[in-house]
Length: 331
Length: 309
Image 1 (cartoon, each protein chain N blue to C red):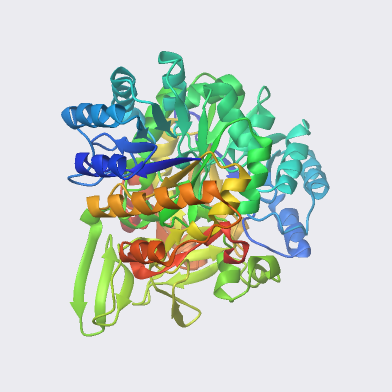
Image 2 (cartoon, rainbow over the protein chains, first blue to last red):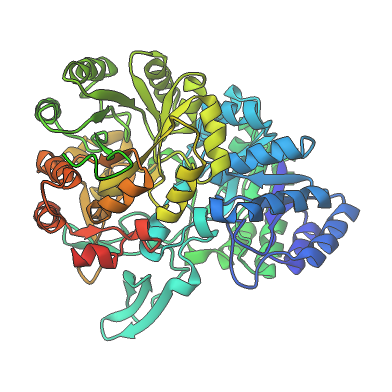
C-alpha cells in the first residue's frame, strides 16, 4: 500500500519525500488543478527541482490536472497534460473525460489516474473509464463505507486509492456546486472550494461572521475557533434551530481502521492538504509512514499510538477528527 | 403562430424527474395532470435515493407508455449516485430496456448505455467540446448542460455539436447542487440513514436551510442538496431560442407545476408577455427566483434581466 502525500510547494515536496512518502502529488500554478490558491503550486523550475529531488530518493511524483476544462480555456488543459508528459512525471491525475481522451490519445504511455474529482464510485463507472482511457488507478470520492470500498476492489481491475487523512469532503467530489452557488467559483470550474477572494470576516455585536459571496455561512461566539470557511461546515437555521446542517468542522482520520484498509486491498492511501504548511506535510507524512509500516509488519497487533493521534490533532482543522464515511453510522 | 418570425425553432419543453419523495398517489395524480399540459418530453424515475421504492421500474415503464400514447416523449432517468451492488443491478435493468430513451446521471449508466442513443443528465460532467464528441461517439443524443455552466460555455458547445445532437437546459426549479452518501434530511432529524423512516416524505419540496440572518439558502432533499432559490430562465427565453437550445427543463415542484409549464409555453409562443409570466412565477415559488449561473455569476444571484422583467 503506497503512501501518497500532498505538496503545495517545493519545501513541502522535500518534506514529504524526507518523511517517507512513496509518492508526492502536486499541481501546476493555475486553475488546471483543484488546489488553485494564491502562492501555491509549481512553476517550471520548482517542478524540475522537485522531480529530481524525489527521483534521487526513489519517490514518485504525480501531477494533478483535475479540474474541468471549458471550451474557452481548453488549450490550458492540453498544455498542462503535454507539459506533465514532457517532464516525465510518474502519473497524471485527471478528472475530465475530454482531457482524459486527449491524454490517452496523445501520450499513450503516460500513467493516468482517475482523480477523486472524476466521481467514480462503482465498478461500472470505473470500468467505463478504464476501457476508454486505460486508467491505471482510481481515487474514490469520500462517500463510500469501508465495506463498499472492499467490495469495489473485488470487482474492478483498476487499483484503488482512498483518502486517509485531511479535510473531509462530505459531497461526491466533482459533483458539488455549493461553492459556485454562493461565490461563482467551484472546484470544477476554478480549482478551489469557497475561494478566499469571496470570503469576508466581520466582527459584529452578534458574534464573528463569515460570509462567502455575501452569504452568511457561519456566526460564532467571540473566541470560538474558526476553521477554513467551507460552506458545507457552516451553521445554518433548520426548522428554527441553528446547527451544522451538513457536517461539523471535522477532519478525516482513518488511522484507527488502518488494518481494515490494508485487508480490503487498498493500493494507495492519500493524505489531503496541498494547501497546508510544510510543517503539516512533514508531521502527517511521518506519522502515516510509521503507522503503515507498523500495520504491514503485524496487522493483528496494530493499535494507533496515542502520540500519532496527538501529532495529527495539532495539525487538524477544527481539532476534531472522524472516520467519516468509512464508518457506516456516519451515514 | 409566429414560427415565421424566427429562424431557429422554438425550444421544446421538458419535465425533469420528480426529485422528491412523494406518495404513490401523488406521483400518479401528478403525471395524469402533466399529460394535459403542453410539455413535450417527460423524464421519469428515481434519481436521488434507492431506498425510495414506492414506484418500481415497471411502474415507470407503464407510465412511459401512457406518456407516449398521449403524444409526448418519455425518457427514463437513472440514479445520480451509484454505490451498492443493488443500485447497480437496478440501473443495469433500466438501461437494458430499449423501448425508451434513458438519461444517464452517473458514469455507470454510460457503461451500460454505450452503443445506443442516450441522454447525459446534468450530473454527468460535460464541460467541453472534446467530452461532447467523445460521448456522441458512444451514442449521446442529447445532453443537459451542467447547471453551474452559463451561456458562454453553452454557446461554445452548441457551436461545436454534431448534427442531430440536442442541448437541454435546466430552466426552472431548485438547483441540484450536490450529492452525498449522507442523507441530510435524516441527519437533521437525528436519524441514522439506515433507519431514516422516509422522513424526506415530510418535505415535498425539500427541507429549507436558511442562513443565521434568516435568508433562505439551501434545500435538503435526502442525499441531495439543492438551492432554496428557484433557478429560472424565463427572462432569457429569446436568447436561448436564438442560440438554438433544443429543450428547456422544468423541474417538478409539489404545487403549480402545470401552471409553470403553461407560463413557459405561452411566453415561448408570444401569447403571454414576460412580465405577466414572471409575476406568476414569483407567486408560485417557495423562496424566490435566481438565474446567476446563466449569466456567469454566482448561482444564487439575480441578473439585471431577471430583476427588470
